[in-house]
Image 1 (cartoon, rainbow, N blue to C red):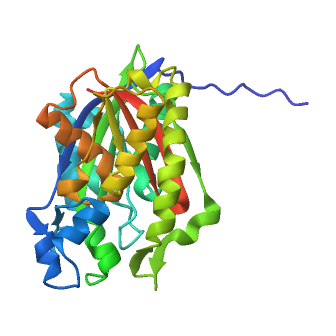
Image 2 (image 1 turned 60 degrees about the vertical axis):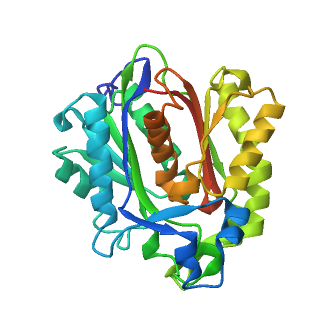
Length: 327
């Protein structure tokens, strides 16, 4: 056997944490009454079905990349660092109309993160949690020093505007987090997976418009996601009573409430704060979790040092969850 030099591996810090967060939404507010003028629906029907009061739609010339740049730049500023301190950009999304070039490289350059490692992730509505898990592992492996994760979506590009079942739900926006090194864990291990036998529950109809079988997704999410959240706590060494803030993907307020109810039945506190950002933001897929956290921190319902349990789920059917410490 020929002698050869041994490969050398990088060694990163013992842990990672979220250093800063940021988000953005389009200016245009679309109410349920606005939608009732173009389709057979009512404010009462929409609120009863999904809990949404209003949502934000981007203008035709406002791109996914534009929103990602704004959210990402705000997260970098919130972390108290310069763009040059970031060396990797991960951009979870499922609504880029063209897969080439990817969104991450464009966003990195516009923010000022030069020569970054940059790639997109498509895990649909679980994308941000997937991206956060990858970022954490990159930090701990020594492959990256600081990673910017941006969930950004322009769902109005892929939703039939008169589809009563789906047009009432989806909206546009972006949310971001900067991940960096830490001595003590600020991001727990990820619990992730997929239910590939259910891929037909959410897909692109005619390769143009998003379609979901609402009842199937509702049944799956209300039964499967709480156990995934519990597993994420277990592998992080936490109990349900340790959770200060619960942020499920903002898919449907009824699903969010069902997940919270199941966690409280397992010991979560009555005063656990539960994200309900969907009421005024709609379902923004991979952007929903970081956007909700940013809004909650701004409102004072999520505070620095809080234990936050996040769990994303969506097309694939992919899911992922982890506990973090709020920056």
